[in-house]
Length: 155
Image (spheres, rainbow, N blue to C red):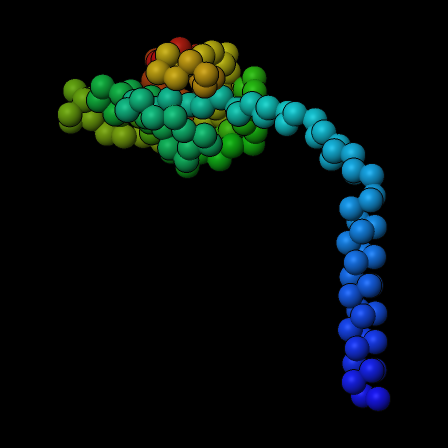
């Protein structure tokens, strides 16, 4: 009796497996997965190119006078960094060069910084870089410098 029961269970299991495989094979082919829309290409915001030709995004410091380092921005904090412009605050550290630069003293001035005019970077034409910087001095400012100063940035 046990032998018959085992045989019956084995036959039933085999039939069940055959039915499952057969129905899967007989099922119509499933439709291809829905096409996903092409990924939207994300453009990166422009970079700030430093004196050494390195791309920077939201740097905490930046040298304005590459030749001698007598003017630099430090303690930069950026409020925005976008496709058209970047805005932030920091300190402009400037050498007074009195009586000459090697003997001069460095002075600190609060400054508001604006970067704009993005253009393709010559080193990497697919990368945009800010080509102009504007400094706003809300309080004191270096001698012989206006309250607002704009410089072209190197490429």
